[in-house]
Image 1 (cartoon, one colour):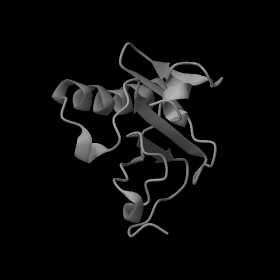
Image 2 (cartoon, rainbow, N blue to C red):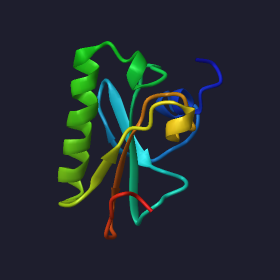
Image 3 (tube, rainbow, N blue to C red):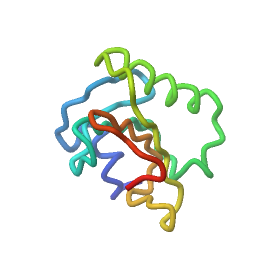
Image 4 (cartoon, helix red, strand yellow):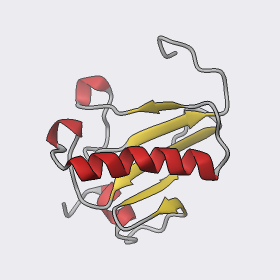
Length: 110
């Protein structure tokens, strides 16, 4: 998608320091963090949301990316969030998993 900011980050058209990268996914720090640790894990391939993600291998890559990032950074306690759709809080329409940590997290969020 030509104007997708996450596609541009994944394709290295916009400079970003990756916390993790492999053939299928990248992870980087959120520019508007909600906690001391706030990392986004995204596929390199454009997929608008979880509702549009039909590739089970890519699903596994994204979840494994969360596991690998948290292991690499020695993050023991964290929340993983996937916002799907505008009313659910999705702001960038390229699927992304949030890794949020570094402070006590309550439920419901707030």
